[in-house]
Amino acid sequence: MRESLFEPMSLGSYQLKNRIVMAPMTRGRAGEQRVPNDIMAEHYYQRASAGLLITEATVISRQGIGWIGSPGIYNDQMVEGWRKVTDRLKPTGTPLFLQLWHCGRASHSDFHDGALPVSASAVRLEGDMIRTPYGKKPYETPRPLDEAEIAGVVNDYRQAAAFAEAAGFSGVEVHGANGYLINQFLDGRSNLRQDRYGGTLENRFRFFREVLEAVLEIWPADKVGARISPNGVFNDMGCDDFRELFLYVAEEIDKLHLGYLHVMDGLAFGFHGRGEPMSLAEFRPVFKGTIIGNCGYTKEAAEQRIAEGSADLIAFGRPYITNPDLVERFANGWPLNPSEDMSLWYTPGPEGYTDYAPYEP
Image 1 (cartoon, rainbow, N blue to C red):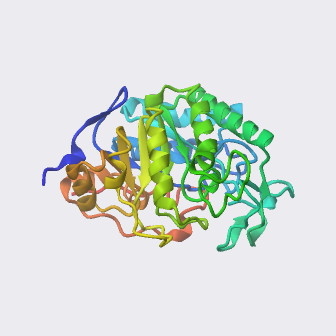
Image 2: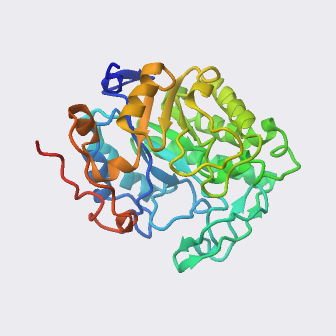
């Protein structure tokens, strides 16, 4: 099998050095004000040998918050903070896309001065406790967004996309996966609406479509990506018509000519078990552009997907935590550092974040 994982490729107007993507990973280093900082700039810089970098999920508004220490992109201070990151990356030539995020019901009133989190419908997330600023607590039943409010959230995405442009990013990725707000509208178990945002596939996709169209008012299509998780159970996702739903979503996104579709096809985050898992090969006929595979990939599996043509790029998440030089390790057959210490995933400071040394042969 040829080593196609290391071949360059074009992504819109960008020339990628290889087909390895650093996946978005929440790391909680932005502090209470959610302003990106020097240590975050160093973290991304260390991993710039990837063909493409996608930032950690970044909230588009105060309403979108649901995680301690995650960064935002909704005020001028955050724009200036992200400029530290983009300025550090520019000399490397590696494109850096900002992932746009709204947590929806995967949040808690502790993040919102006592106000309930919002979602498509008043359906509680059944799952583990959520970590809030005041400790771990059960999830709450969210408040459904009314139609007028939905238009406001769409505008928040538009404004966040404009802030991302001002911050110097190469592009943006709209996070429609992992049980967050957009996914909550897509999934028939969390979306029980009877209006034009619920029921049919077209209606459940409407919010996602409106968000993408708003972002496309700011960015050219080749600099916009979208992320979906058709197999994912994370944050209590999974509906019986998931296959029909996500093939429809991919086909409709294809009509927008986005730069890429980021599909979490792997099962490392768990599987909802409502049928056979979806594969990248199912998406290729309905999405003609660049496809990124993601979730639990090994180097060998990544090479196979690219060689067979079902993916153009493969994103790696957890291996990048302890191996900032993942590309070099893969290319040279060097061993990977041991698995990450999960107790350091979301702690402030450099430990477990920027203190992993590159491999020395």
